Each structure stands twice: as structure tokens, then as C-alpha cells.
Image 1: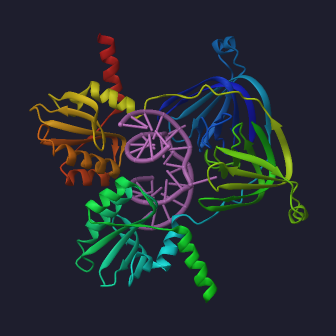
Image 2: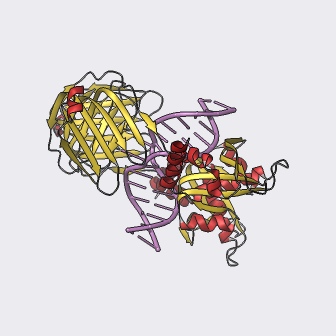
Length: 231
Length: 231
DNA sequence: TGATACATCTCGCTC
DNA sequence: GAGCGAGGTGTATCA
């Protein structure tokens, strides 16, 4: 990993064209040749970058560039596309390299997956008498998050989201269309379950006869802990 | 901007929990207090991070941590949520600070906006006799990218995408449903135009009577340049 | 401020 | 490799 602080201008050409005027920035050159251009603010996203696989070459500045004060020019070319990043360095304030080794990687725990696990374990949250059929019920157009049956044995498809958006309702609608063509399953009802459901999504869901359920993550986790303590 | 290279372990707790085992990494502390943890590979996304607004505090290691070899502990707390990042430094290999100043920001050129401009200027790409009504035609559920009329004067709503996905077809379908309720406009036909249209999106569009048009960005740009030279 | 659509999205999984 | 869905998505725009 090479870290350079420099006054530089940057040009990207590829899926779009982008230009960064002359300013002081941090340049990160990773072991795989990828390059990140960071400013002193914003988010985790660099101002500009080149993803691997790519190669970084330091080329001599042209006479014009030399006249403008360019002391070095980096050309970062993507290996599989025409994407190219050009960094013109006007002044190098810091330049150091470090051997980081291979990273053991991130251990993640709990996202939609955990919500799904919790809801599957406490499926009666959706209504008394509900029973779980299975999670990740595969269909031709993708997996339904949870399939279950209501107290009367009717099939219910559940789409689960952390934030209930209009897209989620569309997704569930597509599943329901498909599932209701299957005579073994039909009629299949739909439940849109999320920690938070946007008003527009709620309106669309109700318009399509889909029930909305707001999930309380903490309460579900509490039930889970209570259950764990009991047994 | 502070740049630290250190052997460290990292724990994130917030919307999910994540843990990074002890390894050598680059730590970036930006002027707004945000922190990025980068390894020597991957993409532009850090292994872990804290977005602004947040505050970084260096706290004394606990006796347990001291025993494990922790020399410093950073606690980065998000200002508006319970998100917290904890970095335990075991060995600092580099530590430097730099004044970068405010970045003038990125100048972008050419995305969906440019496609829309080009297509609007050369609306006959969609068919002989087509005429432009207007771009960004506002409706209650959002703007239709392009509204135009075909050779017979029938209204045509155009949804434009760089990559034509199933979502885009759904979006256009919603617009068409709404527009066709307006007696001044109905019947309104739909055109789904994109540089690349996914097979599933194409199937769905055809199933709904929506015409698909693949756009050649370079050709459109070429027509534009030719036009510019003529006048 | 909230909602919506876009992104050089990235990432991980399945087929 | 293509398709699909999730993301601690982030970011800009517009009501």
C-alpha cells in the first residue's frame, strides 16, 4: 500500500467522464494496482478511483504539462475495459509505502438475514395460528423470503425488508402473480413486513390487497432472548 | 486528514455488528471526524468506516486491553444514531497529519442526463415522424423521462435507462397506468429505451405491450457532432 | 426536510 | 459469466 498526499488534478474516462480540478488530496495505491483519490471529507466513497483489475504506470509529463507545473503523471488503466484514470501531480507532500499483508476479512452478523431468522422463529407475529412452510422459497424469478400458512391453512408469501419501499411491494407483487398460477399453492396471500414502511409503499400494497406488517426488531429479539432463557 | 498505518482490530456496532480481526491496515481520519479502515485490496469500499456526522475520541485502553497489547483505542460515535466504531491499535507503524483544505469537487459529464438530451434531440431514433413533446414530463408519481408523439400523433411515454432492468419496466408501467387515465393523453404507448436491455426486462416489457429500443450512445453522439458541424 | 431515482454503485449468491 | 437482490448503501434533485 502506497500513500501519497499531493496537489493534483484527476481525470476519469470510462462509463462517464469526470474531472477533479487542482487541489490537495490523498492518493492510495493498493497492492492490486487499484487507486483511490480521497478528499478530506465526504463519505467513504472516494472522489475518484480505479477498481481492480488494473495497472498503474508513472509516465513522464508532456512539455505542456511540465509548463503547467506537473511533476509526475499516473495513468491507471483498467485491464478489461477502456476505463482510464489520469492523475497529474503538481506537488508531492508525502509519499510512503507499507506492507500490510492479506486481510483476514470482515465478520458480519445480522442484517435482513437476522430479521428473517427472528420472524421465521416467531411466525405468529404475523397472526395467530400462522405456521412456517419455509424460508427462501425458490421460484423461477427469485426466492420468496418466507412462505407460511395462516390459521385457515391458506398460503401466505412474506416479503421482508428493513425499510419497506415501493420496490419491495413490486417484488412481492411479481412473486404473488407467479405463485397464484400454481394450483397447488393458489390462492396465495401477500404480507409485506418491514421495520419501517413508507407511506407510498403502504398505499400501493393496500391497493393490491397486500397486508402490511411493521416489525419491531427489538421486540422480536426480546422474544428470542426470553425463549433462550426458558429452554 | 490523519493517516495511520497500524496493526489493529475493529468492531462496528449499529445497523449490524461486524468484527475485523487483528491485522495491519490503513486508518484514515478525515477533517469531519469520519474514519475509514482500508485493507490493501478490494474495491474502493473500506472494510469498515464511520460516516459523518461523527466524533472520534481516543480513550485509554482498559487493563484487559493493555494486557492484550492494545496501545490505543479509538471510539468513533455517530452523532445521530447509536452507530459506533471501536478501533483497538496494537502497533502504530505510521502516523501523519496533513492539511488538505476544501476540495473544489467533482465535475461529471455524461450519464443518463446526456443520454436524455441526445435522444430528445434525435427523437426520430425511436421512429420516423416522432416529435418531442417535452422532457421530464411531470406526473403525480414522478417525471416521465420523455413524452413524444409518433407519426400518427399518438402519445408515447419513454423511459430511459443506461442499463434496462426489470425495475425500469415497472416504473414505466406505473406511468402508463396513470397517463392512460387522462382522456387528453390516452391512449399512451410506452417505449423502454436503454443502452443495454436485460433479457428478463425485455420479456416483461413485451408482455405488457411496451416496445424496447436499444440505444447506441456513440451513434447518438456522432449524430450530435455531425449536426453541430452543419450549423 | 423527506421522498425518489441514480450510481464508474459494490458485494454476495445462485444457476 | 449472467442474473438478481441487498447494502451500515451514498448522493443529488425536487417537492
